[in-house]
Image (cartoon, rainbow, N blue to C red; front, side, top):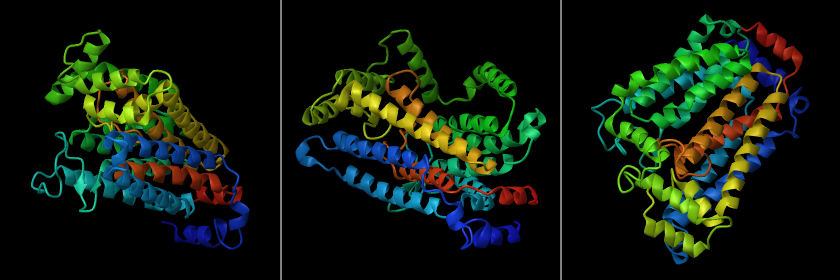
Length: 405
């Protein structure tokens, strides 16, 4: 690490008494991202309560209260993430990446007692912290984005085939470890984010398209490596596409129930009490978590579902607008990577709910129940705000070019 550069950043170049006010820009698209994050989180709180409190008299449920606490922690984390200049995060990128990899490896150690790592639905993805469960795959997303953004910020090797190898290896390690848990849902989010960051950094589109084509062609070869329940999920979605109701009381029960509740919402939805009763008596699995979008559509109908989609579009559009106005390569690539994670995750979750993609256990960012998910989502929003608030001057950007790798 170049200590002289860090001192310059702290004292003068970024945020010191001489330039803090000059480099801060309070008017930024990132505030729209924060507003969309808050709106989605509030909608999520209400939807979780609808799913967990079976009658209005039992509201708020214990799960709702815990989610409200997670929201407060997440918003506090966003403030923390927005405080130091985002360019200083380059210096913790690799350490955070290594720590996240170590945690992912820890999850896979078979001798770790179940009191610490207890499998859920066959996946070893959570560490019991006593007061809450921690999912390392969530924070690994941020460590991955910071590492790739720092790696790509001024390089040009990725414009050639050979230069794509190093970013690919950086992505392959967490993807492989998360797949072994097994958690195909979380693992599937890293590649779209990597591609988005590579494109932003100047990689050639034709190279990436060819890689996708080769990977798609080779995908059937991984079929023997999948576990039995994972294979059944893919078979189930094929059955749905064909219009078959096979597995409606088995592997497709969750999907069919979610789709039925989405349809029951019609255009404007149902009353509060009716929604709680319908969710309870239909026994929708993971109604407060993976299938929370079905609860929103049941309560508010097509209009409510559309509002949620629009909020995600606003989140992504305002974040990308922030990236557009960010002149620093590290900040721009970082924002695009975070946006890809949020956007792709939301699309997959909604696709799961309406039967367009297999159910692979992906939460809805800011909306689904979960402390790790809420914390990571708000940290991402805080990092977008961080980059939006600060506009690096050209002299500091030139000095960064001279930093040793």
